[in-house]
Length: 162
Image 1 (tube, rainbow, N blue to C red):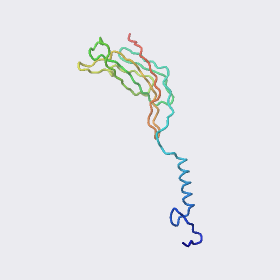
Image 2: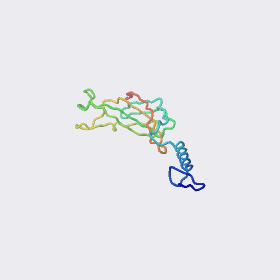
Image 3: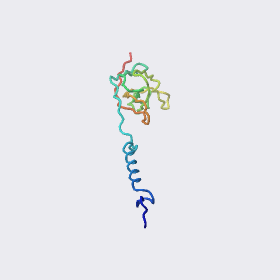
């Protein structure tokens, strides 16, 4: 085989110099190092749990308040209630539990008990008791990152019906 001056023998492709492939591999490695492949998202910086959470059972409302959380655009409230599905006066032990979720923008909220009414076949009835109230800050969605519910604060409501 006769080689002309200036031509190189290359095992990669006919007529393509070896330096071309070396440069191509270098550029691909450089780009890959600068922009890692997207896999599972890593942990997001979380919001703190709301401080000084207070829940009071008033006569017809559940009043909940807490300290505002820096960085939270909204708050998620979860209220766990128990029902006695066999009697409307809660004379039996509660046998059903429901969790209600609310989304609010302020750190003070009053939830009407009508939100907790359930029908077990004999008409709507109120819960026997509210077991737990949880509140967590919701961070605003960012580009490419979904909304996150971060740390929750929990409390047992205090009955306060005069």
